[in-house]
Length: 262
Image (tube, helix red, strand yellow):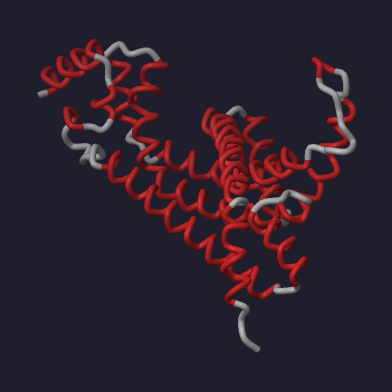
């Protein structure tokens, strides 16, 4: 048995046209995952007794249920909810075009958000608590401490893990083809069924996934190199990564504080 290289060459442009759908699905799912992870991480870090345990149980449940089952649940649940919202705020449900793409985004976002929650929590806990106390001593408000001290460092600490989950999510979008979302793998299935060249179509899809993942990893490494160079040792308060983002007023306060300590 030999591969049909002519078909593979013709199939590459067809599958390339499906890449925007895959990338769009990945970005929307990642956005949902980040929002879900930040919300869950906040409840865990704040340590509100009931909410903390509830969030942990929800995350454990999401992690323990296969992604395909979550996808199928959202596949059937989202159209029911959309039908119930028919006429609400000008929204009109079209049974000929069910919202299967939002269902895939919701399933992927919640699934990966449960894992990214651990990244958010561990990244925040990795920050030296003394920096928060120093910010309070400098007269910085809680919002300023979060925005200028915690957030910049959390971003740098979490980029490697976030990048891994992003690439994992990029490949995980292939399951969306099970519910009728025509992305890269869905297009490969259609092309293969029309020409009965299944091996060639899936091989081309695999190569395109590989190329996209390599490019994504390269871009993430560039981002980490750009931001990580400010992540200097914590023994010198004037060279903190967070210091790069402080306002002039906050910098002057921090300088005065460092001089007093010195």
